[in-house]
Image (cartoon, rainbow, N blue to C red; front, side, top):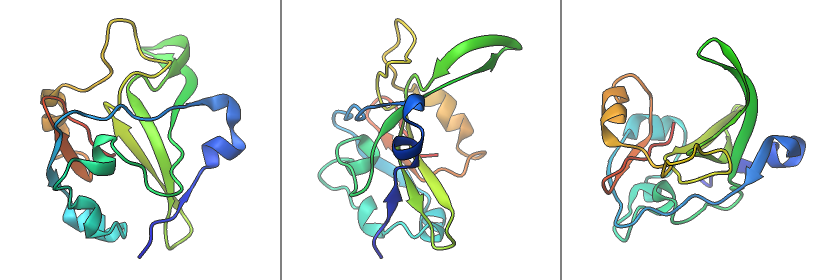
Length: 152
């Protein structure tokens, strides 16, 4: 089965993103993935055969139809209006079209710097907070060098 992606953000909401490629991780390896969830989402097992790198999961490649963007938005943070916010280290790779007509966002956490990153950060993710989150979040993959990246 071939995965199909749409670019809703790029096509319909041009003021809400900056087009941006993820920063590839150096020496990354796929160490775990959720096989049951991958099957439910019709993600082919071949995407998890990453013997020569981390592939799409490590920001090394994109699948046909993916149009990566860092999203910008406004809202409250810590109970106070914060004005403009945005994806400081996350990148929306694309929106997968599912068999039932719905879509599923493929979003990399720790994907590198974006125009919305805070000063002084490398925009990658430390491992500890995400290891704690693993049992609570239905994530697909874990890619490591010394930092973690997961698709949620």
